Length: 123
Image (cartoon, rainbow, N blue to C red; front, side, top):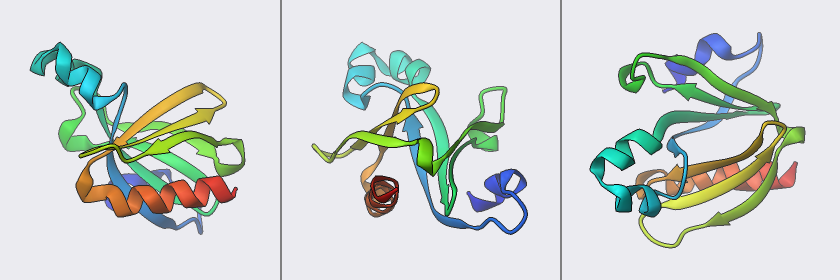
């Protein structure tokens, strides 16, 4: 995961926490559409938080034809709109300069989700 993000880090920038996420609508909504709908709507990403930025990196192994940097935002430009753990998935919605972005963390990445949430909420 960190190897995939390394080319997008600035010199001297280090990852503080990283997690495997699904970018898109609520996972329950996507799965109601069908397995094909879930596959089409949910986009796998690596969320990598540094001291200055949040990066979303498209994993090479699951890129569906495209890999690389999906988005990078300064932490100062991010605001947590909502954060919750209703069940298997932890959902965080961020306000970014590009609009609202929904990130879904599976139970396996819940601790990382909470760290990312706390770091962004702190500013």
